[in-house]
Length: 131
Length: 131
DNA sequence: CGGATGTCAGTCGAACTGATATGA
DNA sequence: CTCATATCAGTTCGACTGACATCC
Image (cartoon, rainbow over all chains, first blue to last red; front, side):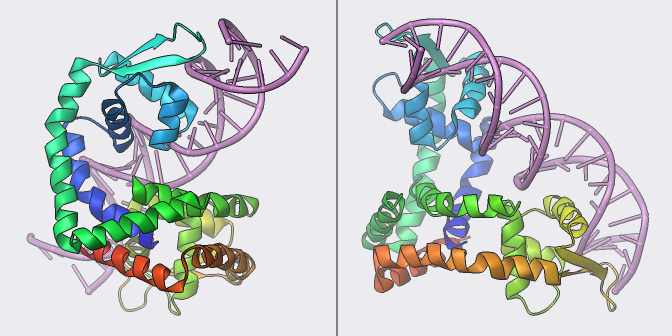
């Protein structure tokens, strides 16, 4: 519950911004992962990085492709593997929303202080690594 | 994302146990809140403690009432306010699942150590309090 | 009356399972 | 053939909104 409350506290600031741009949290995670990666990602890699399931991603990607936020082509070396890339339009969205995202992160840092934010990060990573 | 990963890591151990008993995470949160409170809770109080929305709760409570896990009556002093209590059957479920829940928490404690778990808790609470 | 509480109805997004096409 | 990757189909659940009944 503590983890949920903390996440809810952070996201409640950020969700309205996403809604303005017609994005769900999950779609935002996809866009960020693609923008951060400097290469095309497979659906499997995306699933891992965004904590989404394959079928959910599959439908989301179809919808995001219709909105021209991402592109899907199949890999040359392995035709099973999709190549998902972010489009110029998608990247534009990320760069427009990005600053507001960092602002939310900045609030967090000014609330906790840089050292304790770092501590929090390390502890969370250790919990995540338990799996 | 760090908060999500940490939570996912914790819950991935626990979710199969809930599934065994036919409970969703959200229903479990309701049961725990009711078991922890030694008095009837209103839907509003439940919403606050479980991070669920009113309408979602309303439907869930109806379903849980059909399964005889909870009871709903209206308050004497204020007929708008519902009195939600846990039934004997619901309490039985909590006491059966409880130990497994604490086992998961124990894993966390043995992974981080008691001091750092405490630190994590405090940091998370501070983030949650930002709202 | 105005404000609070809870429920209902309906829509939407995502989780999840099982089956299937395709290719390594 | 096997295994992996991705998608499809279908169901279920909760988020969310707007309307509404009820009561303070």
